[in-house]
Image 1: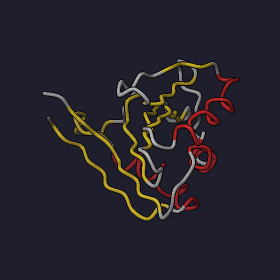
Image 2: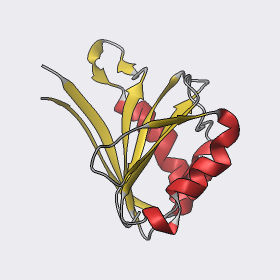
Image 3: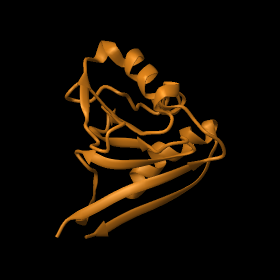
Length: 144
């Protein structure tokens, strides 16, 4: 049995990864996670994640927001150092939606540790994303 948790976020219009990151930075989120910076441009169907050093954040954002990548899935890992948790932000072609998957030290519900503390993630992600046009979300925590 495995567990899948994610939050699908829908925006009123296309967004850039940079705009999303700037909004989330105000809530303490960062591209820098314990292993550096992780990103992905899925131009070959393999979802091959790459690593970069923290001083390459500007270049990583330019790459994932490049016009050359608009037709591909792109992703970045985000991390909240104060809360010691994070995950993947995945943006499909078109960039009017994205998904957050808590993959870095997933926060668990106290009293039910098998379940993800979705309320914490929603409170940390949704309010700052309203500034970039967030209009809806759907959160799931499922057993496969």
